[in-house]
Image 1 (tube, rainbow, N blue to C red):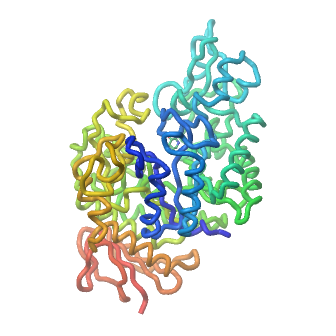
Image 2: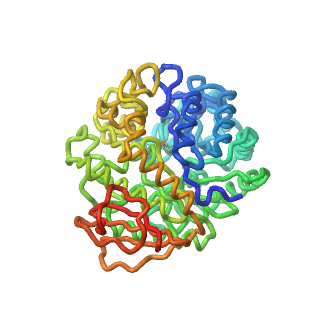
Image 3: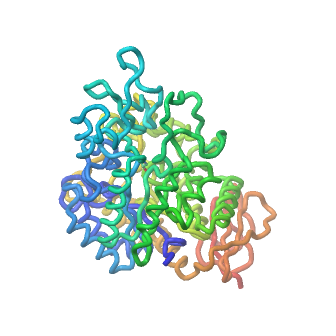
Length: 543
Ligand code: NOJ
C-alpha cells in the first residue's frame, strides 16, 4: 500500500524528454517510446511535470485545462497508453497538480475578466481594488517570486494577485467551487490509473488577505523560522492542511490509496505536517538542493530529516536536482558557499558559464558519490531526467532564446532555469542528439553527444551504468526504514549501516581514507586496494 515510502521516482520534464514527431517539443509518445529505457534504469515511478494545455508562460506550470493533454504533447488516449505501458513494466505514474494558480487562459480567468467587480467569477481568484485616489496603486507592495509586482491591473481598474508570473493568477481557496473543482481533477486522473500527485506550491494555497495587507518588508521568509510558525500571510498557514485532509479522503477512495508529495518550501520543522498520513503523505525535502558538497552539511541534513520524518510516521525524500535548479554535478563543481546561498550558481549562469570557474570533472565525481549516498538512505529518492547521464547545467543559452519568465521578470538579474531543461541527448549525433527527428526547442551544446544514452549504454564506467547498477542493488538491499551511523575517526567521512548488512561510506575529503571492513559491492568511481579515494562513495556488505 505504501509503495512510495522508499520508491525511486524519476522526474520527466515532458517537453524535454523525447520528441516523437519532430516539432522540437517532447511529447507523450516520446515517453512511450522510452519505456524500455525507464524500465532498464530500474526506477519505481515516474513523475511527469505538467503536460496540460498551456501557453508555456511558465513551462507548463500555467495550466489552461487540468483535465486534458496539450495537443502539442498528445491526447488523453496517448496518456492512457503511456500509463498502461509504464504499469506493465511495474512503473507507477505521478502527475503534477498546480493548485495555487491557473493560467490566464483558463476559462475561469477569462470569465473573471469579462465579469464585473464583486462577481462570483472574480471570487474564484484574488481581485482587489487598488490604493490611492484612483486605485492606480497596487493593493500592496508584494513582489512576485519571479520578480516585479505580484499584482496586475485589469481594464476596469481592479487588480489580481499573481505570486508567480502575471499569466498565473492565484486562485481563491476560500471558494468552495475552487476546492470542488480540484477534487474533480484528482478523481479524473485517479480514475485513469494515476498512482499519485506531486502538488505544486503546496504551501501557498491558504492566504490571509484581511486588509490592510502586510507590507513586503515585514514578511520574513518562513523557511528561516524567523516568524512564529504559520503566521506568514501567504505561505505555510495552518489552514492549508484542511485542503489536504479533503484530498486525502479522495486519495483513500482508491485501492491502493493515491499518493501525494508536497512541494512545500517551509521550515523543516513544518514539513512533517504536509507529509502526514492525514495529509499528502509525503513532502519534498529540498535541503540537499541548497547544500554544498560537505560532510557536515550532509550529516546535519540527513539526521534532521530522518528524525523529523520519524516523529510524524512519514518517510523522508531526497532530492539532488530538479527542473528548478542548477544540476548538482555543476553545483558541486563550483566553489562552496554559505548554505542556501545560490550566488555562485547564479553568477556562473549569468556569465555564460565562465565565472566562477566550473571544475567539470570533480563536480561529476562528487555527483556520483552523492547519488550512492542518497540511494543508500532510508526514504524515497527523486531523480531528475538527465542526471543519470551525468549532465552538467547548460549555461550558455543565448539570452534571446531564454524561455523562463524569471529571466524577463527579474529584468535579467536571473538567467532562469532553462539550463537544466535542455532536451536530453539519446544518440551521439543527429539533428537533436536523438531527442527527436527535428531540432530541439532549446539549443543543445556539442558536449551532449558523448554523454548521450547510446554513448554511455555499454560503457561500464559511465554514469548511466552506475545508476542502473545502483538501482538494481538498492532493490535487492532495501529493507526497513532505519539506519545507524557507524563511528568514524575522520570528520570528512560519513559511514552508516542499514539493516541486513548494507553499509555506505562516503569520503568528502581531499585525500584517501582507509575503507572499512566488508565486501565492496559498488563504488561511485573505480577503487583499487583498501583505500577510499577523495569524493567517493562505496557500498559494502558486512562480512
Ligand atoms: C514550482 C515549480 O516547480 C516551478 O517550476 C514553477 O515555476 C512554480 N512552482 C510555479 O508554478
